Length: 67
Image (cartoon, rainbow, N blue to C red):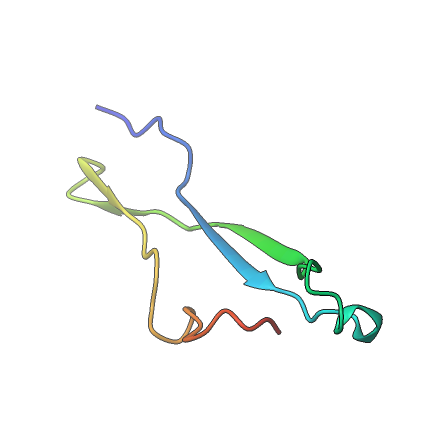
């Protein structure tokens, strides 16, 4: 049996800072930055199983406040 699925992806989204000229606007919304990473896949048991590390504690932000 071969592994024929695409590599798993990590998709992260974070809010960008609101421009200063929009701070008083109650209807203004921040932009969103989207990052998509293709993750490396490790073969296990001669290719019977495939594994990819999706998240680690250092790569997941503890807040979504932007950069």
